[in-house]
Image 1 (tube, rainbow, N blue to C red):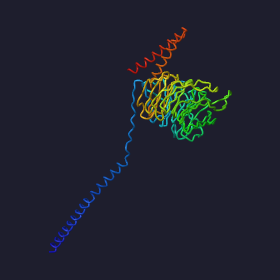
Image 2: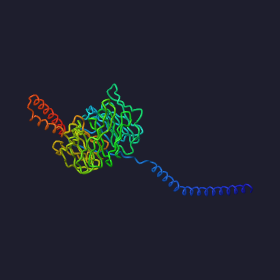
Image 3: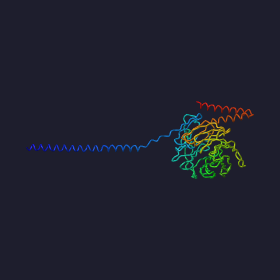
Image 4: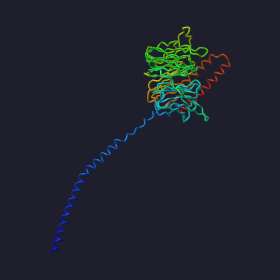
Length: 434
């Protein structure tokens, strides 16, 4: 009897325990069902947060492609927009500066090669907007965008023939209040020039001391430059003229004064840009009035002799148009936005047109010292063009001289020069065909 009671109690306990386990199991299942959507939502939220934290990939801007039969080469080592170009006076180097914080020095003898090597000068914590070679081609000066000052770099030649670059211990003092649009060094090595849009031109000595300050009184300056002979500084801007000053020094080399030399008057609207021939005896100007003009500036201005207007030619222009005159004075190049037009200086005829040269507005236009190439900048590339117009103009000039020559020696020399120039032109034209 007692044994039967114990068995009954054990059975009842087992049943109760089983029921309790079942209830707990049901509760756990319910909890799982309730937690499932919460865990799923949490996983989705975490995934979404991770996607938000992931930075979108920046696509590199595609390099602008340009081709033309007269395009000799394109120099593409810069990773930022190029703002300025300058050839050394010995013709061996081309300098370029960019907002990628570098200044590049290119060898002109490599222009026609497949690979274009260059030397790089880094601008720490800043970038250069302007660059100019020294007369001896052993240094260059730059304008720093953030520092708003001139910095001099020495080019130190190494044993392997390349250069290292060393910045001067001190930059020039800050003197400009407006945006600086150009700098330059006189070929004589006697002074440095800087100019800003607010009609101010500062003449410096090579140590950074101010020699003189000029107010152009042109409302705004659009372009200012030192003449290749190193005597003059010229400016243009809102007014329809170009003003030219002479920077005078005593025979001992001491600075004397800046005196007004002459003006170029004839445009009916503001002048965008101007340029000199290498001997400073010719100047060209391009204006908002839609013309470019060629001037004879080989005058005795101290005797009140004015420059002579030689030619006026209609052309396409836009705000910021640049003009370049070949060193020999035979070819004129003008930029209009992203396009370039080349004219014969002797006839005024339009010889070549290049459309869509750069993806952005052209920032600089220069001929090399030997009149062989025209270079342009406007994006991350420098384009180098064969100056075919220059070859043809030189041949025409020598043929004219040959007809007038009476001396046999002169005739033979001219004939040889014509032959050499024609061979050089044929070589370029044959290369463009291939």
